[in-house]
Image (cartoon, one colour):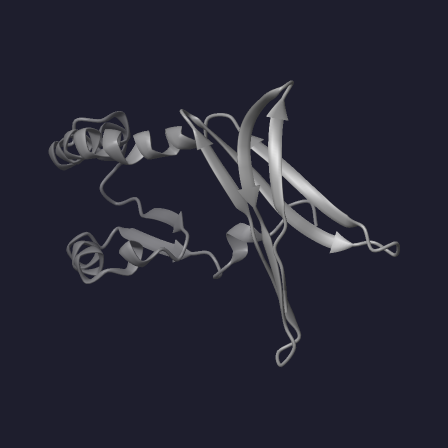
Length: 151
């Protein structure tokens, strides 16, 4: 069973977008899914989603505008140029943290607290740790980064 109304978004008399959002009910699993209508303009995105029906049979419609949504794609483009330079700095020890660690007395242990991201447990990382025994990695529990510190 599906509900898929069409909407028009106007600014004054000017048509800005024609969007279709869909809400589907799957009786076997009892699940409801929604598909947002999306309209992209230069840097911004307009999202329109159908919510729940109220007791009168009226539908809740949510409209979101993300004014700079397309800028998210600039990050990967910048990283392609920046990452090699950052890696080179780290490998040569040309950064403040590396110099600070180098000044620590050789008998001091270094403890690092990390999340459970796969690269932190990669074979190359474990091999590096084996060559540098004064370093110890401690991993926070899986999903703990999603916990609310206030709770």
